[in-house]
Length: 124
Image 1 (cartoon, rainbow, N blue to C red):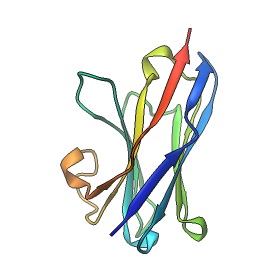
Image 2 (image 1 turned 180 degrees about the vertical axis):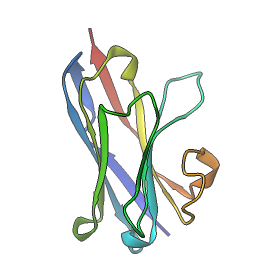
Image 3 (image 1 turned 60 degrees about the vertical axis):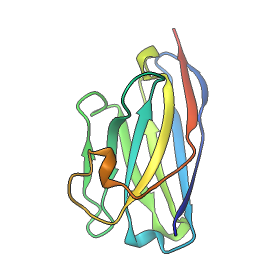
Image 4 (image 1 turned 180 degrees about the horizontal axis):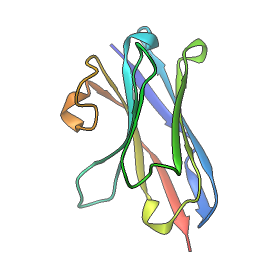
């Protein structure tokens, strides 16, 4: 019932910043917990950050804590991922996802809906 669409990816130099957006449609956005993941071909999809709808609690993977910030704007049905101090190893396809449960948000299998992904490439 939820459709997610990521945008904001692109090419950026190491040390630079990007802000990804994920717009939700098809049902109320406020009812979903949201997460950001990334994936490199041949590797497991990696959890990055999550934010709950009930109390806006945020969670971060250790690899991005202090560099990435997740936020949401319910009036715009949008969740954001602000990415600073980007590194070449951040290069991946970035996905947003929506979950109906607020537990185990670091796990892919928790999420019910996924966006199509947006490519982020960080050059050295």
